[in-house]
Image (cartoon, rainbow, N blue to C red):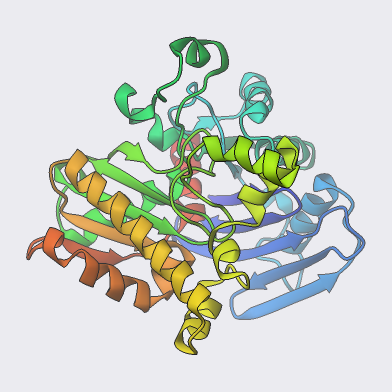
Amino acid sequence: MNILVINCGSSSIKYQLFCMETDQSLASGIVEKIGALDSYICHKKADKTYKSKQIIDDYFSAIEKISELLSDETWGAVNSKDDIHAIGHRVVHGGEEFKSSVVIDKHVLDRIKFYSSLAPLHNPPAYNGIRATKKIFPNIKQVAVFDTAFHQTMPEQAFMYGLPYKLYTKYCIRRYGFHGTSHRYVSCAAAKILKKPLSKLKLITCHLGNGCSITAVRRGQSVDTSMGFTPLEGLLMGTRCGDIDPALIGYIMEKEKLSVEEVGHMMNRKSGLLGISGSSNDMRDLSQQAEKGDKQAKLAIDMFIYRVKKYIGSYIAAMNGADAIVLTGGIGENMPLIKQKLSKELSNLMGKTMKMLIIHTEEEHLIAMDTFELIKR
């Protein structure tokens, strides 16, 4: 069975085609700047890469182009689009309703649209992408895999905010958590590496990239996570501020004469590593700058590591210990400096038995597996 995985962003679509019998990735790619004059597609098959700049007006046009490339005589991995047997979609927000992946029907599609109010930057692209694929591939089943689903096992004391309870019942205001597909994948991978059942492990999984989150995983279930109602809460990130005193929002608005939208943009797009360093949100650039004596770059790195260390320490306390700490994501996987600094900072907490692992996350592969299992049923 060949399964296509689609991940729709606000102006891009990432995709990957898997053969489930051989557990292989047959082709992958990305369509960037959908709706802009300088949109383009980058498609990879084996060690060959196809790149093309062309106007791609909308999600339908983008997925149509993806379908053509996947069945192209030169660049394709299948003979025709009929050789694609199912599609799995990454959907960021499923509210409290979706606790696992589901086959998409009209009800599911309507609810994905409904939860757009909780994820206005993420759910509308997924909704539009699903509608487009249903037109282009009308006869195959499609599956939604929700980022929030993995965190639906959090207990009430972990996901509730200290606000009036009626705000939860009226507006679903609570901590949801994100990156759930990544945290679930590396948890399963860690169990294999440690050669222990996931049901007997306590893990702290750290997805560290431009967006960052940490999850406490006990017996294979998320019991706490650093992101909250939105992906803004928690760690210092590439351009997001993470945890701040909420009273600062009104204070900054008054002092800087900013609107709600402007201060939101600042906290999401102009803060974090970029805001502190004043130069970059890329940890590789900051490491080079810090080595040359840039004090703000060094401060940004020190703050990043300090926040990660604090969350790890709090989750060790919450679970009364941990068997392993897992690093993943662009920073977690590719910056040995971060592992070295964290290992040193956490040496007293880790002792001799707790491991620190670096595991490459493969969210697309997990989406394909979920899709395969649901279609088989």
